[in-house]
Image 1: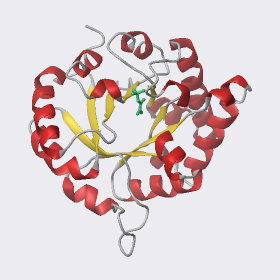
Image 2 (image 1 turned 90 degrees about the vertical axis):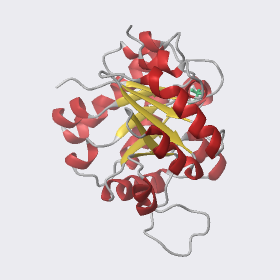
Image 3 (image 1 turned 45 degrees about the horizontal axis):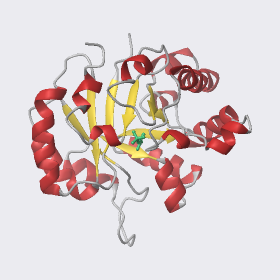
Image 4 (image 1 turned 180 degrees about the vertical axis):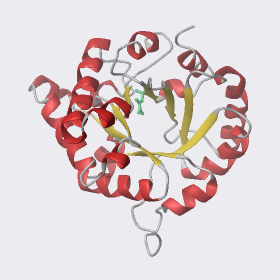
Length: 250
Ligand code: PEP
């Protein structure tokens, strides 16, 4: 079965709950699609407003993070049950901003992925190299390490539920997109690694997204690549023109 394209937005820390309601109401008609899956990941405090506004539409609501314990004395953290109860279906894990600003490690990413899966949440696991690493020629070594540790101890059935987002750090929020060939090369490398670790079924089922300055002008070329199954979109998911990314093939 062909993998469905996913247009996933990452709103980061940009909208209040009332702004969330207004933007999702504007988005609903323009992102309606039978062919492409649509996901908007929003800050925890915006989740109830987002879930309510998205009701009856094809928009799924995701979180931008979760904690890997069930409950307890973890001030400021959000437990998986809380997300599930609030109506969230997906959760971004290991975004480069969390790794870079908040010191998130590959081991924590692995714990978070396992915890998300335990609760029926779909993890969107981010990986990506810095510009320095690309210039040193270690991109694929780095990505393989991030994915290998992120997927540590997952069964094949668990592994194919994870969505991997390849996001070169130098392309995030910079307006610099990886060329479609650069993006395809790494996304294919991730699929090859999944094949090595789990075999053909997982490699062919798992969705691998590209993220890094995806916009209405470059989505079609990126999503046409055989190993790119959609995008994780930051800045361009905060505007109704996100609909043009969803309808990239029109
Ligand atoms: C992101 O936040 O995951 C991202 C890719 O951002 P942008 O599209 O703005 O580069």
